[in-house]
Length: 364
Ligand SMILES: O=C(O)C(=O)C[C@]1(C(=O)O)C=C[C@@H](O)C=C1
Image (cartoon, rainbow, N blue to C red; front, side, top):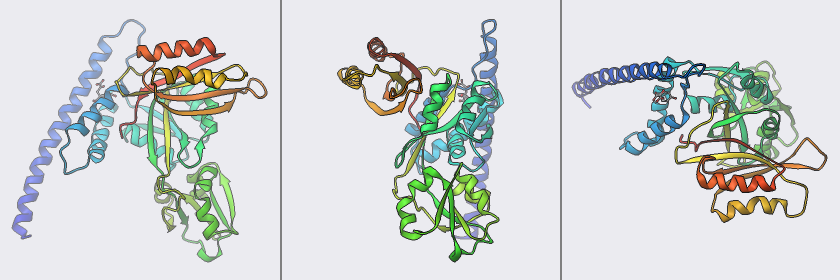
């Protein structure tokens, strides 16, 4: 390519950037207007609802449907995700608590769902995320709920039993783990590997093969593991890209998770109900009496009405020995007439039924 051609293309890019800049600013002014309209039309004592997950899902889907390339759908939606995040911040800067410290996969999930224009607050434990949301100190919380290799995150499920929370969104993240070392680590003298228990379990076979005699130390998060390794000459950490970059660690081995499709699903929790979008999921907790056939009774109405169950998890109820609750996710919104009828049928048989929330299926 000649210098001349390159120059001409850059002139074109500059001119397109000016147009994009103008359009984004127009869009941002629209969002300011939206905020004004939302505030003006309130009944007395009512608070404005600026964040609208159902609308955000529709905007992102529309972008993906209309995209003709060369950028891929996910890439294009990610750019619009950030534009919308900044527009929302003009209306109201969202405060989001997540399972910290900084650099966790949960933080990456929060950014993937809300974009980067939020005020994010790392919490030391899952329960603290729930408490921060319940206290109204933040608008939303982000917690991991299940991993494709290791199953349910029981701390999260148990927290739902203790707090009244509304699930308003979900996001899935492909999880890649790396073996990380600090500048002072002597790589052939590693005697200890830190990570979160879930991450150690997700890399069990790789560790058995490569570091069979090295002590595996479970810590509160993989970002915490990365933090510890910094000054220790004989240890390594298993963590992801965000933690590696944040703590300036070197990747001794990359993508060491046992399953290449290793993914984690995260939930957004808050106090706000989300209206139907036509492509939603619902999460409920049900406790049944401890009698033969109880689980069968619970599942029949879903089967008879052709409702797609996406997950069922059992946990001790914490209110009696050997009594259990079922966490169930299914496709549909609790305001859909069919789902309403099924939930009514189940509540006739159940000891207790609680709808944790209906929310748009993850778009990104
Ligand atoms: O449509 C709205 O209600 C808006 O507030 C606008 C907008 C957007 O930028 O598109 C911003 C924030 C909401 O979460 C959803 C959409």
